[in-house]
Amino acid sequence: MTPTVLKRRPVPEHETDLYERQCEVFLNPNDPAVIEEALKQGIPHNVIEAAQKSPVYKLAMDWKLALPLHPEYRTLPMVWYVPPLSPIQSVADAGGLPSNGNILPAVESLRIPVQYLANLLSAGDTGPVLRALKRMMAMRHYKRSQTVEGVTDTRAIEEVGLSVEQVEEMYRYLAIANYEDRFVIPTSHRELAEDAFPERNGCGFTFGDGCHGSDTKFNLFNSRRIDAIDVSGVRKHGEGE
Image (tube, rainbow, N blue to C red; front, side, top):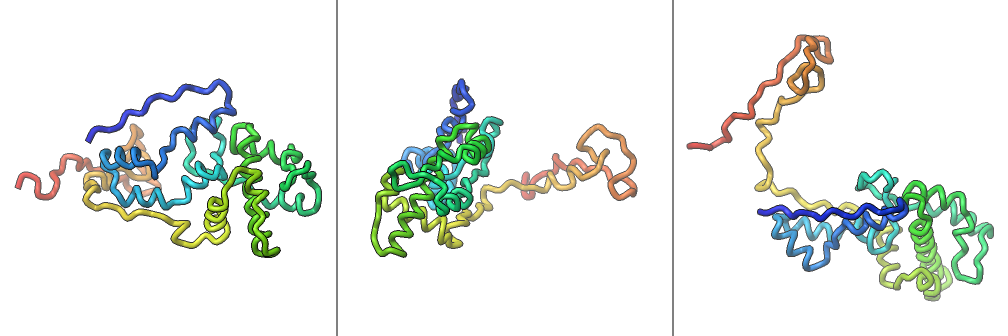
């Protein structure tokens, strides 16, 4: 199996471009070319299916609701956050936001909270934060008109570039959130697991255990030190038989 060599991405000139550069790193699990290459790299098929069913790619890439924490640190965080809607929605419900002739209120008028969220989640770029907030507000407006007023008003979702199918799927994952939708974890493959016996007792919690150069004579529990045993050369079971 030959590993894939990733090309180095150019360093963006401005930190506000880092969010989009991070998004370019992620591959679409529904892309046939990506699936074919993943199978060549030895990724099991059930892992690919789990990636397709997982809401992670939808939230981060399809709907652009989830944003990375401090992308300017360049650590590629794998825990992304959806900006909180309730503080801004409460201001909108109280009539504190102008509409500027649109269906949705002008969220950008709340400069301080929007900029605060942008500094956390998009390296200071308010565009992705505003898009995420407006899309969630549009989903709320659409479902409210559908369930309370009994009409299908698509003006709000059209304003933010969403289709009815996308909004219904967003509602399923964000509002209903069934167990099988939230936790999509593929089963492990024992045939791919390595024997962990040589690594057991190889490194403890205290100084002088073989993990570093300390010569401490006592361990964490003030008892005699137990030196690590190097068993890395132990033959695997059945080897040579």
